[in-house]
Length: 542
DNA sequence: CTAGGGTTAG
Image 1 (cartoon, rainbow, N blue to C red):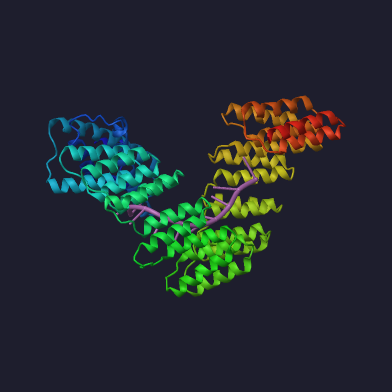
Image 2 (cartoon, rainbow, N blue to C red):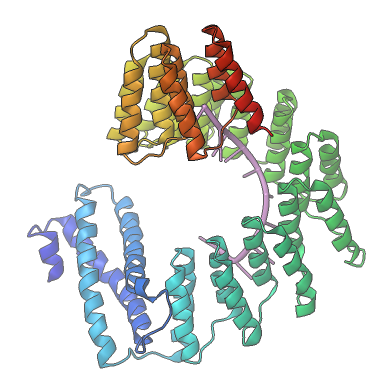
C-alpha cells in the first residue's frame, strides 16, 4: 500500500519491477532488523546506544540502495525512473517498518533456532564493522553476551580491527581485556590488529611493548606481526632498527628464517627512500635467489625507487620486464611512471604514456589526472591541462578539489584572472566547495596583478574577507600573499599589520614573510627597518 | 574484508 502511494499512481513497467524487487529484498532486511530488536528488550547502558537506531536504519538503507543500484544497472530499458524518488520511497517504507518492528519487539520475539540466530547476529556484527557502525556492532556484541552466546574470535577481530582503524585504542584494549579474561581468547590476528592500531597513531613503543607481551600470553607472533613492525620502523626512518629487529626475531625462529615478498618489499622501499639503491637491488636479487615469488607491488616499489633516483630508463626497463614476466601493471604503476615523466618535464611523453594507459584498460584515477594536470600547469601548458579537466567532466568524473585548485593556480600564475575565476565558478557549479588553497590561488592571482598593475590589492582583500565569511581559515600562505601584495603597493603599514597578525596567531612561520619585508625596505632605502626585520628573524631562530 | 607492503602533496 505505502509503496503505491510513494511511487505515485503510475503503474509503468519500471514501477512494477521496483515493487517486485522491494518485496524480494525486504524480507531478508526485515529479518535482520527483527533479530536485532528481538534482543533489545532491556535497555543498554552502552554510551553508543543513542545512535543505534539511526545506525541500523542507515545500515539497512545502504543495503537497499546498493541492491537497487545493482538492479538498475542490470536494466537498460525502462530506466528513466527517478532513482532518488525510489530511494525516498524506500526510506519511507523502512521507517514505517521499523516502527512496526518496534511494536513487534514488545509483543514477542521472532522465533528462530539458536544456531541461525547466532550466525545471523555474527554476520550483522561483521557487516556493521565493515560499514563503520562500530557503536552498533559493540552493542549487538553485548546483547549476544548477555543472552549467553559469545561471538567467536573472528567476529571479535572485526571489532578490534574497526576500533583500531578509527583510533579508539582504549576501547580496543577494553575488548581485548574482556577476551583475555573470559572468551574467546585473543589470537595472533587480534594482536596484529591492535599493534597496527598503535603504529597508525605513531605509538611505536607501545606497539613494540605489545609485541613483547605476546609470548607471555601464549601467542606466537607471525610473519604479519613482523611486517607490521618492520614497516612502522621504516616509516619512522629507523631502517637500521628494522633490519636489526628482523634479524633478532628470525634468529629466534630456529633458523627457519623464511623471508617473504612483503618483508622484502618494505625493506626495498625503505632502502630506495634512503637513497641506497644498491642495498635495494641486492634485496631484489636476493628474492630471486631464494625463489620468492615477486608480485606487482614489489615491481611498483622497484619502479618507484628508480624514479626517485631520477633513473627513468631503469624504471622503464623494469616496467618492460614485468610485462614480459606476465605481471599486468596497475594504476599505481602507471601513476608512478607518469609522475616521473612529469617531474622531469617530459610532458609530451607523459601525455603519450597517458594515452597508452587508457588504451590498455587501466582506468586512470584522480591521482593520474592530478599528476598530469599538475605537470602541464607547472610547465605552462594550461590549455592542455584544462582539456584534461574537461575530459574528466565528460566522463562524469568530478575532480577532487586539488585538481581544480591546480588549474585555478595555473591560470592565476600566468595572469589570466578571468579564466581563474571562471574555473572556480565551474568548480562550484559541480558542487565542489572552495577551500583555503582555492582562495590562496585566487589571492595570488590578484596580488600578482597588483604588482604590475597597481591598484588591485583591494580585490585580494575582498577575497580574504569572503574567505572569512565562508568560515575558511586563512593559513600562512594566505598571510604571506597579503604581505606581498601590500609591499608591492608600498603599503608598509598594512604589510606590518599582517606580519604582526601572523605572530599573534602563532602560525608556523617560515623565512618568506621576513624576506619579503626586508627586501622591500632595502629597496626603499629604509635600512633601519630592514635591519629591524632581520633582528626579528634572528630572534625567532634562537 | 580477521591482521602486513607500493603512486599525489600549493
